[in-house]
Amino acid sequence: MTKKQNSKKKYIRHSKEFKQEALKLAEQSSVSLAAKQLGLHDSQLYSWRKQAEHEQTISERESQLATENVRLRRELNAAKEELAIAKKPIIGHLKSDFRLSRNFLKEALIKSRFVFLRDRIRQLFAIKVTNSYGYC
Image (tube, rainbow, N blue to C red):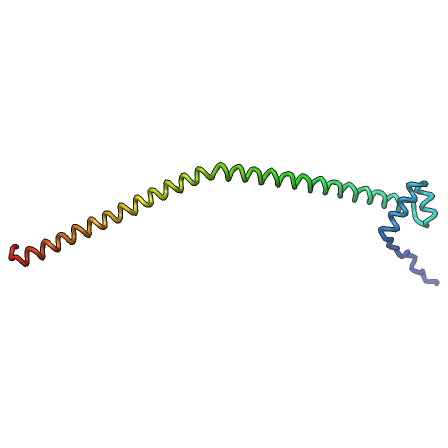
């Protein structure tokens, strides 16, 4: 018996430059003629052409998306600025009102402490004065 030899072909990886040159040759003449000249199958050139068209459409779509992304970012920044401008007077007004109320409360607290301490001091002095004069 004879042994079957491994009949698998080794795949050759072609560079991008080779593929581009092969596609240019296929555009100038026919695909089948270019394939015969290069020792390739017609289907291989067709698949390379399809792949190149797909990559081109993807890169075009990516560039369109990138420009749209830039435009949308500009719109978003403009909207943020408008919102910040609209908020600024309101927030400033609220802050000033809050400060006023906070200061008012501080003053009221200080006044109440002062009044309490004043009254307490008066009471102590009154007790001290009454005790020193012998009044009770």
